[in-house]
Image (tube, rainbow, N blue to C red; front, side):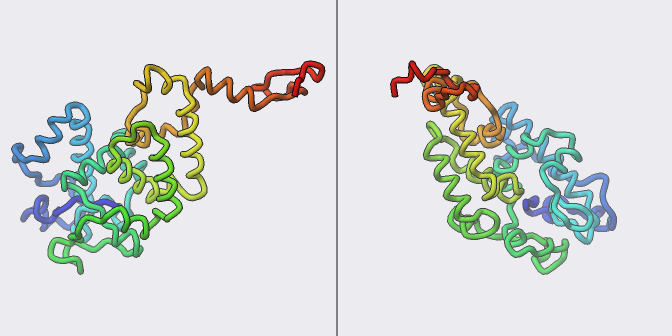
Length: 268
């Protein structure tokens, strides 16, 4: 679960505090000289997409009644929105939203409320037990802490480690780890289906595309995760196809990938 950091400080003013129901507007800072904004501008199109997602997050957070408005991306009842629901509400692609979340967390504009996720507590109201601003100010949670709490179980952490060890030139590790945690939290990756991610990576390792020009077309691991490329069925390389055929010989000829070898020609 994520929330806009310091919502009360930056987005609540006199008029908004007196507005009891959902808001159809919100006061926003006008300073364009901040370091975070300049970092997004330096990212070009990717930064522009992230800023669009940020604006959508602010609009969604503002649409909650005042007594529960604390920067959470949630329904009026306090249930957190899924990525799919945010995509539907904002008319933005899911992969834009998934890609933006770790960037916005790094900028300090968003924060994860791990306590709410791990303990199953309801989000605090804007003037609840979390303090005057209703936010859960916490120190950055380390990877080891994540491995022992919430939906990122030790076996899912071990699977992530196996995948990163196999992934060629594994870059953007930290971003990829945050994306992995998000997938685990959302139920996209579970102990029941994590094998599909590993099998999907193996298909890409054996693919024609990744074997070309010394791996020139291999994306960063983070990008591969964001786009859920483990679901793809890329064309195998010539070498991989040869290995597969060699492993699937059938004298009955009932395997579409097998090389038919009559008994009288089988030298084994």
